[in-house]
Amino acid sequence: MKQQNFYNRLNLKIDINSNLTLLHKEIKNSNCLIIGGAGSIGSNYIKQILKFQPLKLVIVDINENGLTELTRDLRSSDLLDYKPEYITYPVNLLSETFDKIFDSEKWDIVANFSAHKHVRSEKDKISVEALIKNNVFGAIKLLDLCENYPPKYFFSVSTDKAANPVNIMGASKSLMEKLILSKKENLRVTTARFANVAFSNGSLLDGFIYRLEKNQPLSCPSDIKRFFVTPEQSGQLCLLATFLGNTGNIFFPKLDFHKDQIYFKDIAVDFLNERGYTLEIMNSEIEAKEFDIISNKPKYPIYFFKTDTSGEKTYEEFYTEDEIYDLETYYSLGFINSNNVKISFEDVIADFNEVFENPHSNKASIVKVIKKYVPDFDHIETGKHLDQKM
Image 1 (cartoon, rainbow, N blue to C red):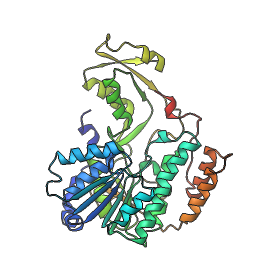
Image 2: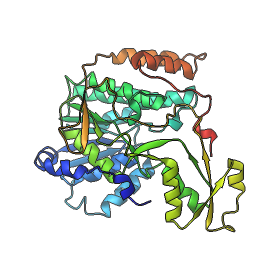
Image 3: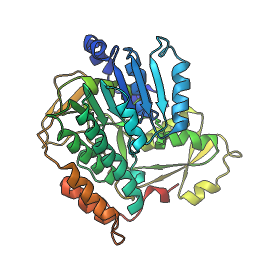
């Protein structure tokens, strides 16, 4: 898929170049702790921050293979040639081992990319418990650690799905935002609501590549459109969001709601055409799987369907009209000037644990707790989830 299809009018380099003095001053010779750094966004953030030569870079992620490939990627480039102290740890943020990593240094920059990021994570009580513990409990633990030993900058990535959330993932990130904002007077904290990262790990578009490699049919919703940024833009956006603005700002890419959202179906068509295929529209998953791809080349089977799974809305948005937002200060970024939020970490943990430990509770019970803290959470529940689809 041609990269320029995802660039639209977004040019984050303009804001980077306008703030080079600040970025060099705050990053050079700093100690950086990156959590969730092996993922698509975290790894691209690391590539951006290394351009400004931090003194020490410690990367934590539960994906040991991802950390290995990240290191090979960085070592195969010139980004580590200035020889910073660099180390990776395959460790869970919620573990006691992570505490030892955090306590080992005085951190100037702490950036958190550890999260359940997919609506697919919403299935049942167990899957949602795992999501909440990562997105909410993980944020609480990290904020508590940072409050005891404050870094100069704390950043944690959010999602566009946190604006008017309809799925548990987005609502958990909305709650995470509130947790972060509740500490904005004690810590220098920022976050960013994100567009889809094109062809990122685990994404639908990334899955297109795997399907072609395995001669398997494509399956794609016909009615869903999303904002997209490239992997490089994802790192640039988070870099800027870490250092620009004021404590409590929620950043987002300055993309147009009507012009810059792209239908997945249109990307699928371009993706196949670019690789020399003609589309063969299938009427069902069964029909798509029965199609003989090898014998019928260059025809390729694809099944378009209308979405009917829990937590899916047909579009996304970065902010609501109830929020105070600024679209003028930066060329490529907007940001929300958040109100003061007071939220008890202890109450949040206790309310969720009560549901998690109750053998008679279910996913709806967890939704009820989330709505206590995120009143605008309008959950879409259909009884179906994405793991039931091809």
